[in-house]
Image (tube, rainbow, N blue to C red; front, top):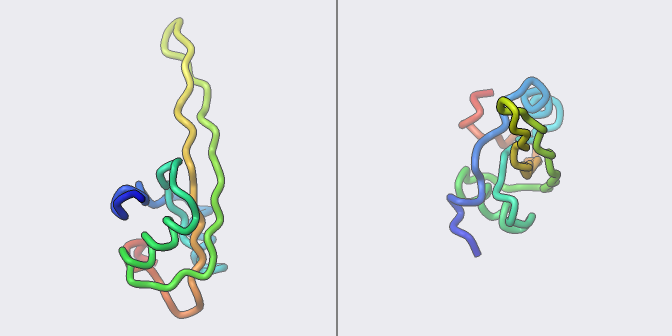
Length: 95
């Protein structure tokens, strides 16, 4: 079991994630790749004092980058989409 502070790395700040908040009350976070859905649910519920209906996860594959003559790849990131019931919000997003 991880510490709850280590599960959620950062919120995803994009137009698509903010549209998802207004349409379906779903919040998007970058999470530690080794965490599972129950850990993500518990971390969001305890850190933001909300109840969670559903957690969906996906991986964003790292892009290939070139540094001069050296080719590399960015690391793959795990993303969690957390859906809350109607009427509950996370104030940290400012929406």
